[in-house]
Length: 154
Ligand SMILES: [Fe+2]
Ligand SMILES: [Fe+2]
Image (cartoon, rainbow, N blue to C red; front, side):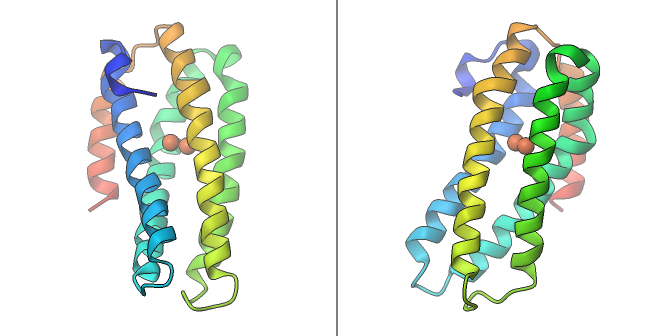
């Protein structure tokens, strides 16, 4: 989803999430390029920390607000998103118990990236357009998301 296409009522909240998405997508690409260069371990640990902050931001504020705004319209999409977050959290917990040189570390991080890519598409191509279509006002939520994000990424 392109940020310039987002109406004012949804723009701040969705742009914040899209910026997070682009950062982790770039990190997974950087990891793929650096795999043999030695910086992969640092990229992986920074990316896992960024993903944990992003999922926490969505689960503590964004998802509950979206669900409550119209449970029939958004409940199933939010449930699916939560299951995908759970899958990512399991892989992140496994990666955090491993060292970058371990067998399957690179494979596990690569699979995490593929799962995250799928999840980002579900959010940006299904959930976010539905919020725009239903004209859900996210402007006040965006303020709370910004404040929470500042705490999470300190
Ligand atoms: Fe997201
Ligand atoms: Fe998400």
